[in-house]
Image (cartoon, rainbow over all chains, first blue to last red; front, side):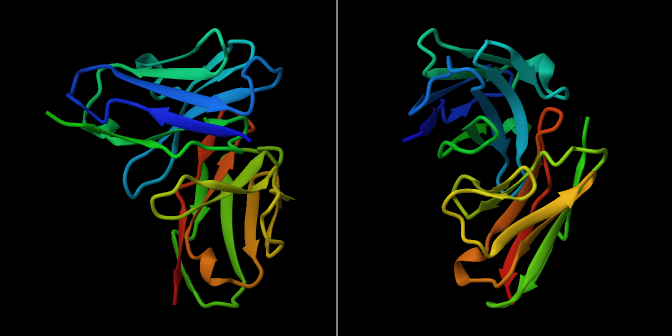
Length: 115
Length: 106
């Protein structure tokens, strides 16, 4: 059974760095072809793809946010991380991780940026 | 970057209606187009992948079609549980979501 679950700080202040973790089971990111992506959704708005990392360690970023994003994975290939630097109010959203071509999604974690 | 234009933004319909939702890509996406349903407070759920492949467990009243830049999701006979928001996603070149279509009960 494939499951993914996001975790994060809940709330943080503007200008700080947001760190998110996606923990998953039911598949391994070391398997050829596997990809884990991060997506976010401000309340009441559409979805925005942020970043992805594949089984080979290759990383992909949304060009509009690339300078602020870093995606990585752990050596056991069961967790993927996302860091977003210099957050502001516009980064307030529910953040999701998803597998491959978005076939399985986590439940999402809400992040609020506020002073 | 590939842009996705989804229409309509809002759709009012009744149980039993046939509805269509459209997505237009800014360039050819080679049928790498998925459709998702999202209900309030839940993660999106994949309905259709690669234009016309029905996700396991999804009812056959959902179908997809299209090619090149133009794609369509059709729900043949709306059921009460289908009232939700629908998104398209292109995965031909990185990933881009459509803006969404909110399907409401008339």
